[in-house]
Amino acid sequence: MHDVRIEVETSYTPIEGEPFMSEQQKNYFRKKLICWKQDILKESVETLNVLQADGDAHPDLADRATSETDRSVELRTRDRQRKLISKIDAALSRIEDGTYGYCEETGEPISLKRLDARPVATLSIEAQERHERREKVYRDD
Image 1 (spheres, one colour):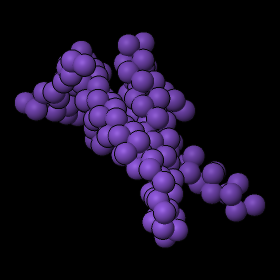
Image 2 (image 1 turned 135 degrees about the horizontal axis):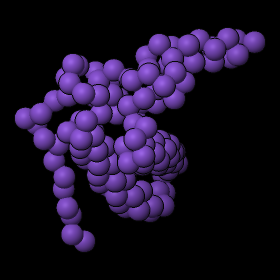
Image 3 (image 1 turned 180 degrees about the horizontal axis):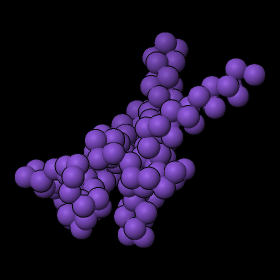
């Protein structure tokens, strides 16, 4: 299998004050998301290899229990990775349709610092905090 690796351009970092979601910013975030996805897929292949290699039956009960615990952790990790890839794909789609970087709740631009730290963000910090407060209220009931 041919491994094509996209690198994030390190000489450019989006800054406040330049036109929001210019082509340069979109390209920056597109490359960042693709690199992140590639890293996750690589880890996923490694996880599969670990799971397959550890598939042997262990005669010792303690070894078998440890192996099952490790397998459970690996499977949960893989599920989180699958969900994250879905979020990355959705973010890449938003870049293409022009909605990337804008809060789904308010329509306002999400700060570049937030997008750089969490490129799959769909809510501004304020909207995310409101969402988390509402979630906490419903959880506490």
